[in-house]
Length: 175
Image 1 (tube, rainbow, N blue to C red):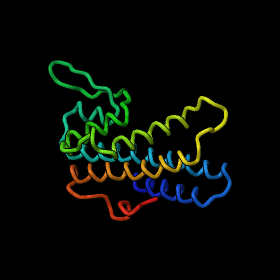
Image 2: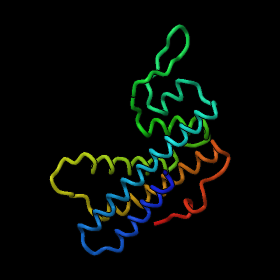
Image 3: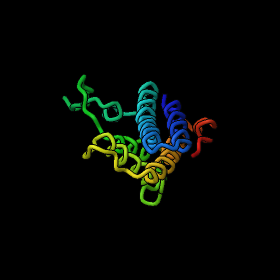
Image 4: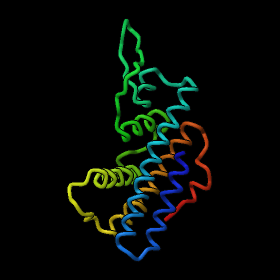
């Protein structure tokens, strides 16, 4: 599903650039941002589900990725049937540290750019004003660099976890 969301994000960002009405431009950019961030969340879920089947992670690592609460009892970890949400960026950091340990968070622009896109998504998801005062140029810039960053990070993880890159049709998405 994450691939479809990435393609949707790209589609709506291109659609925004072809519009003339400010309202329509912003509408398409917001959808593009929501799709891009949903793609990241779906990717994390996909990786978590795949790793569960492969039995390569410890139970507490699985519970972290799948938002399940865990507890230590009699010296062993148990995954409880309770939800305990973890931040997307924490899950990504975990996966990167575990499967792509050479990734440099402090010098990799894709990491900071993805976090910028997430901040914008959070800003439009939880607005503090009645009107959308975000400039079109900011929408355009953040989705362009953010979508690219999301794809780079996903590709980096695919290479580390699955030993192969994302599909070419995803790597070729560009704004």
